Amino acid sequence: MDFSTGPLMLSLLFGTIGFGMFMFGKKTQHLAALGAGCVLMVFPYFVSNIWLMLLIGAGLTAAPFLMHE
Image (cartoon, rainbow, N blue to C red; front, side):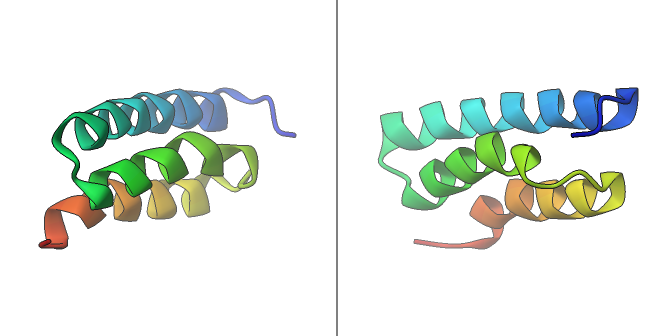
């Protein structure tokens, strides 16, 4: 596991965004936000490359806005 500043800050950022999306999805029954929030909170544990983490996190953050239920 990489303990440098960049991946730790991105993990904190995407974890916070994921928690917010999860709570929003739970409250409004928005399944895309609920799922993206869960994945945003978990995926930084498995991805250590900073560019890949940024790409995946940005895609997951945008996904609920691009999907229409």
